[in-house]
Picture 1 (cartoon, rainbow, N blue to C red):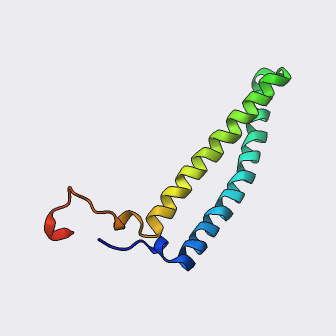
Picture 2 (tube, one colour):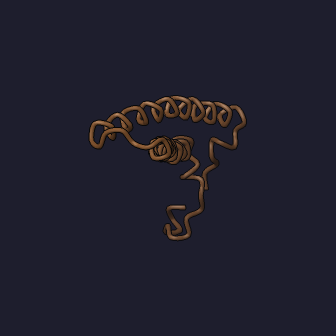
Picture 3 (cartoon, rainbow, N blue to C red):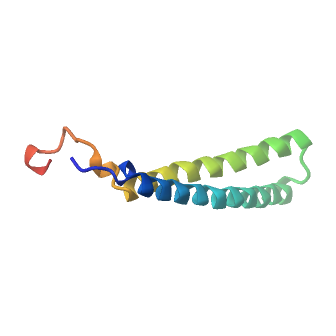
Length: 96
């Protein structure tokens, strides 16, 4: 069983800082997706009621942000060696 690099405090600080920077950029990208999505809706169906516009904007924003958060955690886990540090009971004994 390998140790995860996230067990090292300095590396963990670096990795989580990188994840926060990724999330900052993806928050900005989510706002961009909202603008594009609302623009496409306006072109497709015209003006929408205020409540419909707010719900559409929230749905677009949080969908993009949730996808970014989950993918970011996958990259963090894989890139730090955290995935390799588990004890896999299905792996043959000589590979452990």
